[in-house]
Amino acid sequence: MKYFKKAFDPINLQHAKNIVLTPDEHQPDKFDEETGFMIAFLRDRALLDSDSRVLDFGCGMGRLSKKLIDEFGCYVVGVDMSINMLLLAEKYVDDQERFEPRGQCNARDIDVALSVFVLQHAEDPAKELERIASSLKPGGYLVMVEGPRLVPIGADAEGYVIWHDDGLVIGDLAANYFQNIGWYDYPHREGKKILSVWQRKEV
Ligand SMILES: C[S@@+](CC[C@H](N)C(=O)[O-])C[C@H]1O[C@@H](n2cnc3c(N)ncnc32)[C@H](O)[C@@H]1O
Image (cartoon, rainbow, N blue to C red; front, side, top):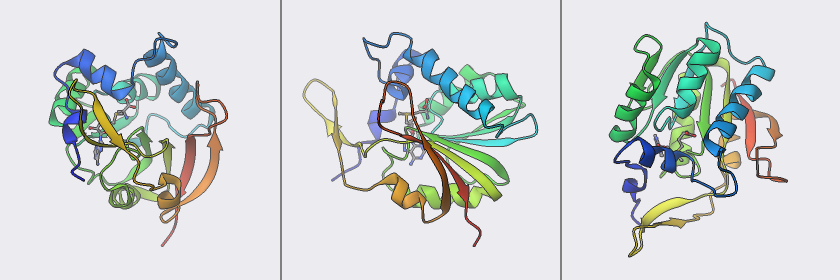
């Protein structure tokens, strides 16, 4: 099956916002609510401060990168495979000193990596996890929000993306490189602990 990269290729900021978090009529404030939830989660665990180097893997249009910088004053490397997402992120985050957009995950000396709704969609999540692990400092953390696999494989006649579950389980793949610290609730996903924290294993 061919990977349909276009699923993540926005034409403008609103389109990008709709891609990063699918709009939900029952959750009109989803964008701000879920962004605020992640920032509060990171603050409560004291994982970040102004000296931290953060990898926002699959940063999209910079939804989390911008808030991370605003809240913690940290340095963020935003990686995304979509050039259009990166161009939008550069404008949206609007901080040339603390935000570094990149097309590939070859970051180094990262304290905390975030992957929020990315690996579940990635073509080769095992390879990406290996790259994330090798970008982290010893003992560095990975915070993930990842549901079941939804791999884009095409679009239907009306342009809606067709998603495929290839059976891979992101948590199982992560366990090759990381030690699990915990699984946590995420807004509007009652009973499904899709938020998890991991620490890089020493090799
Ligand atoms: C659903 S969006 C989530 C964006 C962002 N993490 C957020 O929560 O706002 C998924 C993003 O992951 C990116 N992505 C998917 N696979 C990727 C890969 N292998 N490497 C880098 N970025 C990837 C897409 O281009 C898209 O911007």
